[in-house]
Amino acid sequence: MSTAVLLVEDDERISEPLIRVLRAESLDVVHVAAGQAALDAVEEATPDLVLLDLTLPDIDGLDVCRRLRTTNPSLPIIMLTARAEEMDVIVGLGAGADDYVAKPFRLAELVARIKARLRIAEQSGAGPSDSATFQGAGIELHPSSRRCFVVGDRETDEVAGVEVELTSKEFDLLHLLMARPGHTFKREDIMSAVWDANWWGSTRTLDTHVSTLRRKILDRTDPPSKIVTVRSVGFRFEPEPSPAPATATTAQAV
Image (cartoon, rainbow, N blue to C red; front, side):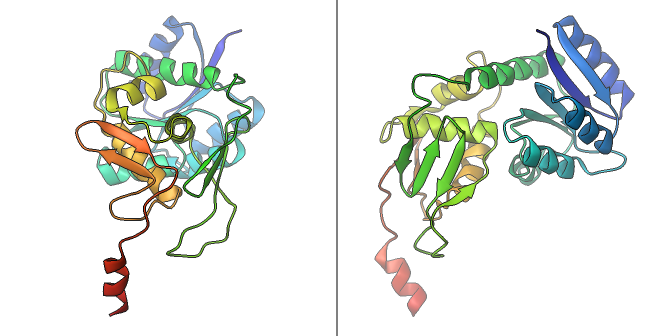
């Protein structure tokens, strides 16, 4: 069975060589040049992956991404964007994208990321540990259904049991950390497990995903206490985060 990739790109200077390269990799490419056409194409036949440009002639790519994620929670989406500033990337990942590639990009790198994302999507199916439920730090993670629930936090008293939407990579990252609570994962090991064993790019994308994930799971203490940064090493998940310092509460009361 062929692997279907939906390319959403209105610039022919980018789409034409990209289509040739992807087809040379035996990928079945469907190309559209507008946001509404992308939504219609996914509704008609869900692809295995979407390459989504953020600058489209009719609908902003971020809105397209949000709408695709709402109807297809596990559909891999890679952004193609000229907006490479950190805040733009965070907004894009928050809209539901799994990864981003800044223009101009190397075709070989993009193909590698596509293959890595497809491999992770394939491996995220049933497995021995998928029936387990992971709990800790006010989080409940269900790998079999790829759902995440947060019970709230002491600062906001948010309603318990609220489901939070995670992108595929955010879920894979949290799953990795929660599967071995208290264990410190090296940055390169996380990149290999969640992204690709042959990843050669910057680990900045890991920091961006961790930042967005912390916000979603209400890891609001300073420093964060659920996903803990181990300086110069990596990250670990703490199932019983430390309470906020009493001095901070006192200062606010004053």
